[in-house]
Every structure is written in C-alpha cells, then in structure tokens.
Image (cartoon, rainbow, N blue to C red; front, side, top):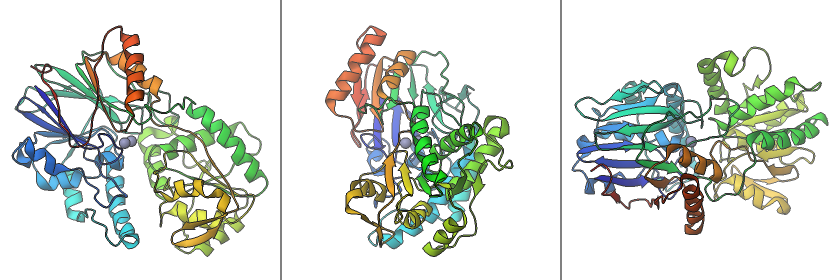
Length: 458
Ligand SMILES: [Zn+2]
Ligand SMILES: [Zn+2]
C-alpha cells in the first residue's frame, strides 16, 4: 500500500512537500516555502493523521534548491533533528544561499505586510540544519540504513543541483520528477534518466495546460534583438529574473551571442543573481559555464538603497542591460529599484522572461501599461518605457512531459506542482496513452487530500 499526501505544492505552485508512506516507511519529498504568502509553510499538521509524530519521518529528500522546494527545511529539522536529509550533489551551496537569502527577505516583507504570519528561523537553527544535510552523487543507488529502501538522484535539467528522485522498496518503485526540463538548457547539463522499472511517476505539471512550445533559444533570440535595439541607442534595459537558474541561462545566452557581435550588449548583474552566478561558475567551472574574469559580464556594486544612486549609475553607463532579481519585481528587491529608475523614460525597456504570480508587481505592471503609471516600492512611478515578455522556460512543456512519461513508462501518474483543468489533463492522458499503447491512470493531486494506491507496493 502506498499513501501520498500533498502538504503543499499539490494543485498549486509553492511550498512543495509530499508525505509518502510505503508500508511502515514514511518520508517527505521536498520541504518548500511560499515566500510571498502570509501562511507560507506546507500544512504539516495534516500529516499527523497518518503518523503520530515527527520522529516517524524516516527520511527527507530534496529535489532542488528553489525555495518552493527547500525553504521549510529548517522547520523540518527543528521538529526532527535526527532525520536524514538527502540532497543532490552540487545543490548544497545553493540551498545555503537560498535559505539565508530567505531570512533577509522575510524580514523585508514584514515591513510591507503587518499581518505577516510567516516563519522566521534563527541563524543557529539554519546552520545546524545545513550541516546535517547529506549531498548524494547523481546516479548512485544508496541504501537507507535499517530499511529495505534504496534511492537514487537523476539529473533533472531544471537548475544546477536539481534532481528527480527514484525510490525503490522490495515491493515497488517510484520517481518524483521535482521540477524538470527535458529540453536543452544553456547553463547546465541535460536531464538524464537511467533505464529502470518505475511503477509510479509523481510528476510536476507547471506547463501542462500551456500551449507555449517555443524553445528557450527562440525566446532568447527575440529578446536579444529588442535589447540590442534599445542599448545601441544609448538607452537602458532591465531584465528582472529569478536569481537561481533562469538568470544563469539568460547570462550564458547573452555571452554566447555577444561573441558573434561587433557591438556586444553590455551586461550588468545585480541582486542575488550575482552571488548565484558566482556559485555556478565555481561549481561548473569555466569550461561549462563561463569565466567571470574575462569581462563578459559586469557585477554592480556600491549602490545604496536610494533611487537617485540608481539613476546616477545609469547616467554614467549609457546603453547597458541589467539582469537583476527578483523576477517579479517584488517590493524592496533590487530589480524593483532598477525599475523605478528605468520605467519613467521613453526609449528604455523592461522585459520579463518567466512566471509572474498574479498578485506580483510584475504582473500588475504588464496589466497597467496603458495607464502610464505604476506603484512600485510604495511609490507612484511614471511608466513610459517599453514593456514586454519573452518565454525562456526552465520547465517542460506539455508535449515534453508526455515524452517523459513515454520514457519512464509508469503504471500510474500523480500530477503535482500545477493546477490544471480536467479537460487539459484528459487531453494529456490521451497523448500519453497513445505513446505507450495502453491505459494510464493520471491522478491530479489536491493539497491535503490523500491518494491511496492500494494495488501498488503490495
Ligand atoms: Zn524549481
Ligand atoms: Zn517549483
């Protein structure tokens, strides 16, 4: 008997954490956070309907260092300091930056939301938690002590240190994809799944309903032309970007493309993007990523939290493109500050490249382009710059997810990390069944609703 209980990140994106019970073995897949939400951790209280207390969690597996998958790890560790925490190789420095970064961020958003109910961790707790984490090499079948359970991390092609997690007991096996990209990505090695017998596939479904099939390179080519057009005239471009993964793809593509140009686009990095780009360069090495020393991109420093300093910097550096976090222009972020300096002027550009939460300032900006004003960081800003959006995805499209199902050939699929309408899921199911030539149950998970797969792991 297998029981699957989504505590967060079932039919939504954010605070991914899933309790899985196979016979007497209980484990958590991911321990994420909803960074912007007032109630931001997974609903751990719900899992006590299946187990008595935290000491019955036998292991925690983390798929990758994005906060929506790892941000609640200190909370889990606090509740059960003895639990083994397994993470994929290369992910630890990024997990560290993400969790410490979230501490600073939580403090900052408290200023903007008085009724904030999020969690705050002490530095001691975070450092004890981090030192308890075990990094496991890719494709290394590992046995969990005192159990008959083995697991393996497979490169998931999503960001550096991302994995799909294969778990096998004597009675059956499952794969949790984590966030996954089957298409080639500029900054990291591709997804690679070994051939294994898999009964259950727990699969992310971020873009299962989306019709976007445009490749990251095509999306980037469109972006590059627009950026070049603006910067060649001496004007400025801001590309708000997720600090981890998306930004490094974009930077790598700019650097590669710039090599072929007589007048390359000057690239400047700011916010958490800088720190994470340095980690990418260190972990991947210059041959796989790029050298930080050859001047192919610049790291902005020494600007204090005053919009006039940002404006002066732009005056001193005409015709540059800035890549800065946050990707959604969250209040108080570096990208929101740059936006304050860039948006008032005609001729400048601000280009989004990814997911925008409906409530985020980024989504509001796209909606109010015709109104010519926007509220950012609590200020009303004139809006005259050119705003656009380009698709550079770090997730798989619907057809790529179907190809993944064809590759894994599971007996059943549980969808997580997305809220897809029944009609789209039915179409996806048909596409998968055509590929594998047999019926395939596909179950949409709903937060806090348990799924029992009685016939599996019997
Ligand atoms: Zn992710
Ligand atoms: Zn995610």
